[in-house]
Image 1 (spheres, rainbow, N blue to C red):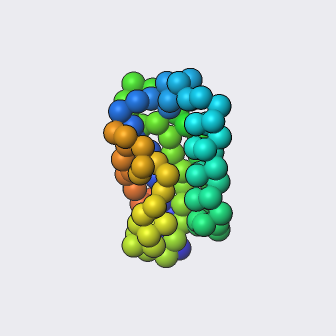
Image 2 (image 1 turned 90 degrees about the vertical axis):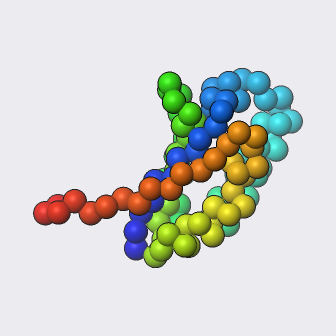
Length: 99
């Protein structure tokens, strides 16, 4: 089984998104993420968190699966994909020789 780093990218930073959301928007957003978490189930190694920085990365998760195709299937209807100016990058962890 392989692990994958999932980077959530956005043209608007996570801090700005959270600060600008109404309580109803925040609740709806969390409900969508909760539904995705239930679907992904044991594939989630670390749900991750929103992040702040100078780039366009707004959050991360760590997932595991037997293949990249399985990860792509899990992320096909991810709530982040529906946000304007948002994208998802997937990077596979590589084994470090000798460790």
